[in-house]
View 1: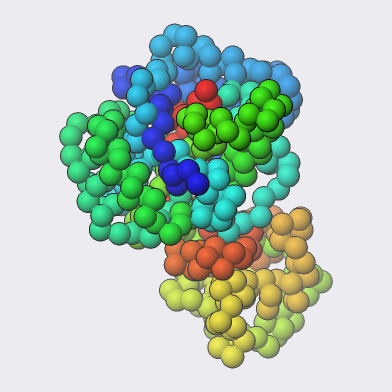
View 2 (view 1 turned 60 degrees about the vertical axis):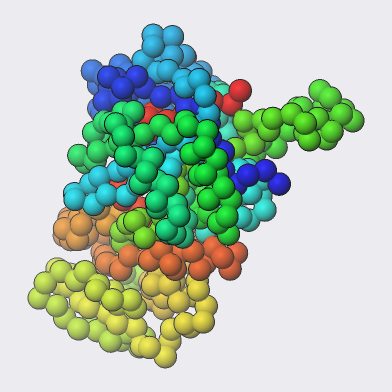
Length: 425
């Protein structure tokens, strides 16, 4: 079994161009938003992660033309020296500061084999269409450019190693969306690299916080390239694998943070209609499973098993009856499960929140005012404010090899695109 993690030769901006390159993750902006953010910024990584912005309006981001343009744009930034590649495999301390909060992790190449063996643990299902997109993105660029967000159980050894590695001058720093500061230190010293590898290998597991489609796509790319190598050297591939360096496609780009520094925001729900119910009838049905209290102020749930409901211009505080909470089940006891199983499905008829067009999800970074706006405008009939899932709950679900309901977590701040990429040699 290979090491859980490995150093890698990052493709990254020159320090003086980091601010020109940095971009939000590809999946938090749509085409129009990406085009506006990249306007007048020819080095923005959005020209690589959302290359349809450089094509005729209406061009599909999943077209052959879009993937080819992304590869050409990446090659252009390399050829002009905006992006450079480090000569030696390294780890990279990655610090994010946002609104007074700081979290510091390590950018690394995570083992595909460990992902297959459930040592890098997931908690969400993936959609085939989104996986297919990431597979084509990796193949067309021959690189992984969007880091997977990982968590590990905080421990003193790794905290000390990371602190020491960030003691000197940083390699680069840039301000990203929402005034988020991204600062990176390179760790190339062989002794420190070995210490970090050993400390990560001592962990029981890493946990995927955000990036399930990127990690699943990395596995598919690795499987395809394994097959190519097997066909190229039949009968000898297994023996060669014992003596050759492990191929770069056997790892995927990630940044791992201690779980106690990570921040999960609430992921709220809005529904298009009340399933044929009047408000009074809705509240009567809700009272069968919840205590319902009118609130003069917007309801941001302060404890588990409570919810805010905004409907017909009024806020209500909901608290599920304690006897209805299956506390021994790490999935069914989640607030997102309780709301789905006791209200959204039986009362509002929302069967599968992955596919039902009558429900939408609003990240907590937008605040409760966005929930009110959606309902007051008439776009939606009701909104539900959630308490954020805790990291300990996420890890318990992953440890049990279970899956969380969709849209259970919203991590903030987000990692940036463009600062570190993993080239598949």
